[in-house]
Picture 1 (tube, protein in one colour):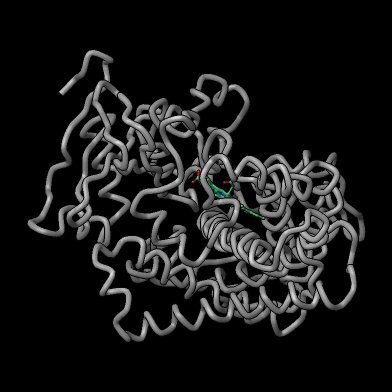
Picture 2 (tube, rainbow, N blue to C red):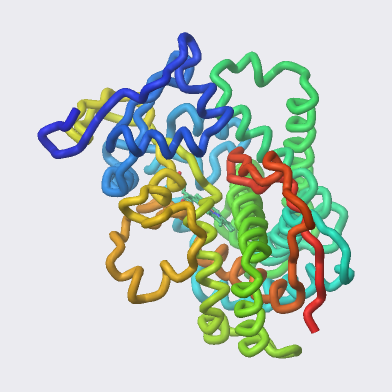
Length: 447
Ligand code: HEM
């Protein structure tokens, strides 16, 4: 139905008795999301007994995320994350959030980001230094390790080679998989069954908690530590142990899986396009000659690597699905939404609308040439969200990813293994973030 506002609203086709659209969302979420965009601008779906509104148009997406009077954190996906994230920046209601964001923002200001550059470069260089010519690697595992080392070194001044950082990196895939499964499961009982997957998830949660609590404890009782990392900032702000724990877990959860999966995908796309990979490598060799340092100026000259990252985050925006709840009755797209209505948002859905991105299934970094991007609505590219809850780590993530793509590609050619790749290995796995399947690539050193 087209409402007076000109928006099309509908009920999504294909609801199953009792479960609604949960099977579609579980089994084949990405095609399901793409199909919703064809059904209207505001489409009602059912998640078990609950009804939720999916936003399929970029301006509705923008509207909901910037109207903090009627929409706040909440909804079925969010509630399932909250028990572990606690009252960290990503979870608190707007009135608490404003204070928290002010407290934490200094760790993401341009001066802080400039300080992180050298660590990011150093880690990107050492990530592949132990690789052997002709060896086969599973890419995402390496991406997790690299990203976990960068965030723990820059934000918490951790010793990147410590056992804690290694176990954190190793447990995050199980952690993300578990959260994603719980977020989509309609019945809480399923989450409590002692299945192997649920056990792995519980164990991953307890490792993450232990490492984080250990780091906070060490900082509180081992002296002040470096004066300018995120832990120091939180101590200076007078946060309690509980507040610090929630903020650190939030940063790690927001910052590891998202960037690691994006790096995995970027390297995957480059492995499918050797000419593009050669060009990225050549650019990196010119901008980052061996032994040279890095500054923001050099970073700005990594144009190809940056466009690879931008297009990767269009194609597979790591944070592919999140939610809001209506806090007081409101009209949206000509439909009245009552307090408590869940609203669902998917950057993936918007990024794959063919009217916004011609041939959306084509990985094409030239979409991001200045001439071509000029005509695109600003709201159409939203991998980091919009408004006051926009990702605090957006520039940080783009920086680490651009450097990692440039440095790794300048040293190694990553080749697909010969023969057809089993389809299930290339199917994206949308958990809390969209992961590649286990992705094995052969290494060829560049001379
Ligand atoms: C490719 C990498 C990343 C992507 C795609 C991404 C995406 C997002 C998105 C879409 C949101 C908004 C969610 C919402 O509105 O409900 C968000 C929020 C957030 N992200 Fe990221 N993120 C990335 C990397 C990072 C990094 C590196 C960090 C930290 C170092 C981080 C920390 C956070 C935090 C703390 C929030 C909550 C912000 C707030 O509510 O004020 N993210 N992220």
